[in-house]
Image (cartoon, rainbow, N blue to C red; front, side, top):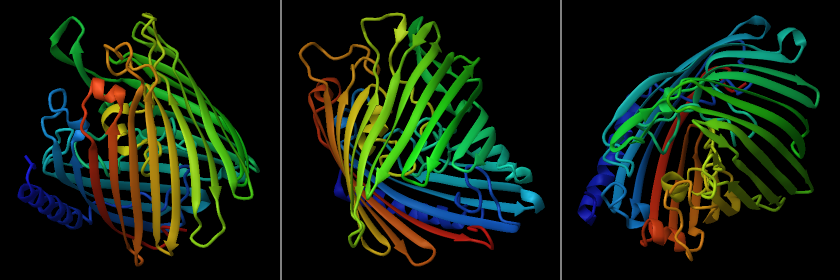
Length: 459
């Protein structure tokens, strides 16, 4: 239990040293997602490859706002993570290509999900594709693949890692077939993907609360969108997504999505609206969600920018018994801090993109060529308070849940190395103090990455 300085330092050394050893000794077996294949599918002719190794250190104080009764029984956690990935691609004539890759990963010490000293390894990419078939703009990709629809608000992460690298989150593959079509400013896509059993949940048995049962999804999800864009400043897309679940989770959700952006002279406005339907067991689903952000990017030295964004993830209405108005978060992608893992401390422990209203103010600048700074300020309120806490909010308690601030530093180091550090601080508001705990939370994460690519990998 890392409660003292000496124990915290030993945990730091064990986490950092262990993950460095893990990452670099496994470097030949793991690798880089960016090397060669994009979400729509494109590989240069001939052989190309990419390798990546990442190690990270994590420290969190007063996790869960100091609540050690309802959550894992520590107030502070220190642990390390590491992963390595490899990608091998072979491009054939006429746009045909093959791609395969694997990942090895592990942790040192215990994180605040209770994951301790575990490792894993798996094949996370194996696919075949055909790009721009016959000059028609049609591309097809089939197999285990990276799948990103739009900006990843609904479809972007098809695998939930519960064993290792929970914070690096390098695993997001789908077993899927995807078809893309592009013609001038117009595009369309359609996909079908298997529901991953990694999204299983352990819950109390409704007939005996002292017994826990595992709910497992079994089935597929389908979706597609049609869109138009004019450069990076104007776009519009309409999408539909359907989940067909024959497993014990019994979640047959559907969603309509409208996404768009408009901008000029450094200003831009972008967002997405989502209306959900379908069924969850015997309950009807009527969730709603979305985000809307305004951004200004300056042409001044350092390219400073500022963004104000609002997120809505509806909560269940306690007055209805046969309808669940809570937003189901699908498979959103965490591409970097706070997108769409809105506020790191709170999103990883309490919010989970459900039953919340969030304001985010983000400011950033690149003071040096390979150095960028970001400050993210969040205000999190509960929508109803009944989606995640059965008792809901007591009468007279406000919906304000937490304020959180995060500072992120990204640093490029030469051609192959990069690093980032993130410090976060969150304080509970009235709802959190009533439902969870009263201690302020803080965290420090540091990560180091080595990456290289072979001939043609980035072309």
